Length: 255
Image 1 (tube, rainbow, N blue to C red):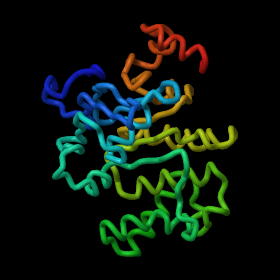
Image 2 (cartoon, rainbow, N blue to C red; image 1 turned 45 degrees about the horizontal axis):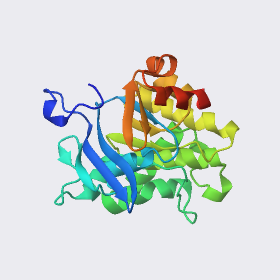
Image 3 (cartoon, one colour; image 1 turned 90 degrees about the vertical axis):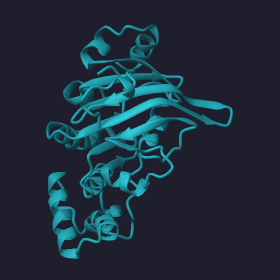
Image 4 (cartoon, one colour; image 1 turned 180 degrees about the horizontal axis):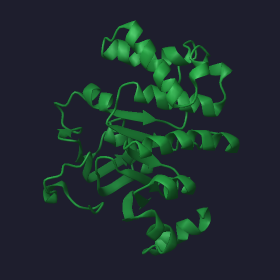
């Protein structure tokens, strides 16, 4: 499905994420200019572009951390941008991992994972603890369940943040530059967790310039500039023979 295809032209398959004619202004600054894109179930989409191109704004709009000036967004059949939508239910299905880890410093790694399921889903402590231990093992931190964030490295904290997002059993994972705050030696451990998620079929939108991850896991790359989707396609084509001069100029600086 082409990234700029409108939901009105979708066939029988329902995209996991649909963005239609999304515009966003911050005062005089135009962050998004008519963005249209779709992400299919199980697809891994990498979003690249220069600073200020609208990547993070677009990503944050998917679970309404940013409110569009105009346009519409769906997750499955639920319209995120509709006034009647209970955004809390959307956020249960759309996990998000940020550049900063945002862990609660007074809670252990396991307690950080247990918090949302116990409060939002009213799950019993025994169940949330078992699930937390399972997820920490999944991200390679089974021995850190009772460690506090200050006792963890940056890479370990980011892996806890990923596990915390997974604790709500989301259908979609959004990653907003998840490795940009990490030291180089810690980046691989986070990317390895993301690669495993991709292999397991998790639908993912990732804002990042980690080209190794793009080549290993991305089904599609979207290049944004000045609030617009300039070009979209498979990683090999985008990186080796981009069709737009704006894409070529950008890639010359990061490849």
